[in-house]
Image 1: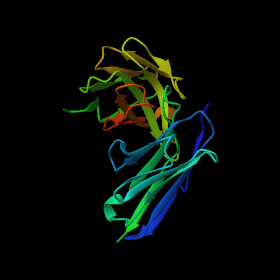
Image 2: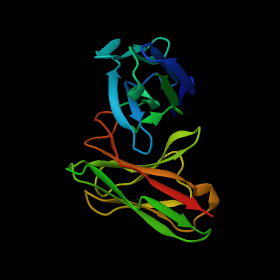
Image 3: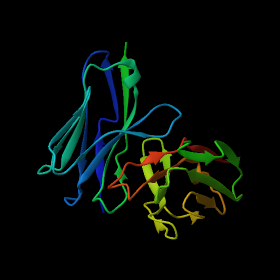
Length: 111
Length: 114
């Protein structure tokens, strides 16, 4: 089955700097790669996703890149703000199977 | 729209006790899921229901049972709770399987088994 590895497990950045979180996946048939943000005491919420026919997708300060050959995808957050502090999860799926999540990255943005 | 609701928010059980976690969604979604979240382990799928009337095991189903009561409701039952089941449990739903459609999560149930 699919295995998703996520790095780093914790990340601290200064406010205004960029943050990058990386994930690798094992199943070459996976074609859907979402990113979820979990704030303290809440359930995860989708922030951006990418499908295998696209190499990059951007939404304001957030972008995701996908390298299907290397089987890895990354989340990029620019101009970080204190409200970006949260746990971020990557996930992967074939499309007709449930998501498999990475173990999460705790991002701290220091003002 | 309330989205995905879960009850209770917190629960403390003694080893061997049983309980049912309730989940309901008001988005007319076909698929529903139960996850557990443990420190350093991410979100692990316990069971899911791709559509009303079907249930399937996920990554960590042992010690749990589920019931898809109707399209709105999906419950998770612990028949004989063990300390290893101390965790935060999340219910989620999506229109189709989550590889196709956005998955929406509830606020979670924090369960402690003594």
